[in-house]
Length: 252
Image (cartoon, rainbow, N blue to C red; front, top):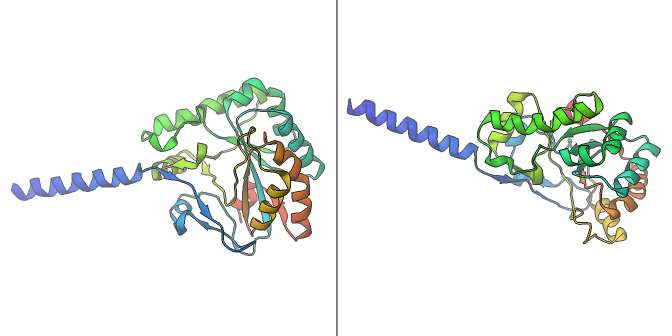
């Protein structure tokens, strides 16, 4: 009887430890190396790949994947859509309910021009705090319902956790619900419209960090990004890069 109690205690302790580890918050990060070399992602951890997460292509993949986190719309976002249309490049836009409500024409334009319109959650909260799959699904379905009501189309099943905050549970829930988690292998401080990097410096940064299979995260409301996107596209193409979609990366 004592042995059974002991084994039960051990099993419960183990289960608690596993559960605690799965809900531990992880902040996405990468470490750039030499110019134009692939960065080290998440300290070299392969755990996200086990759940089908996308964040960088293979070495030798001379493709850049443009992704945008779009919580709201402005004239800079419209300029970026103009540039993408001019160069026939399809991006992935991770959106929130706010842009659907306040800039419906912009969202319709994204969809109608063939971009992937993807899920960035309903409340833009810390997804690592969610330990219940039903609550997690609610976060995804809320924004999807609003998107479908506007466009008549289903939102793409790609999900980017706000601010790159996630846990192993986040990835598990995505897999169980049929979503592909998407992170990035390049980003820079472009989100604050009141504190923008000078265009020349930003261009040099992007081009020096360009690498095989680059998943670029940009905020399309950034004035600097609207100014540099076209020259960056042209420079990358001159260097032999092409532009692909998240489906290209997923199926590679």
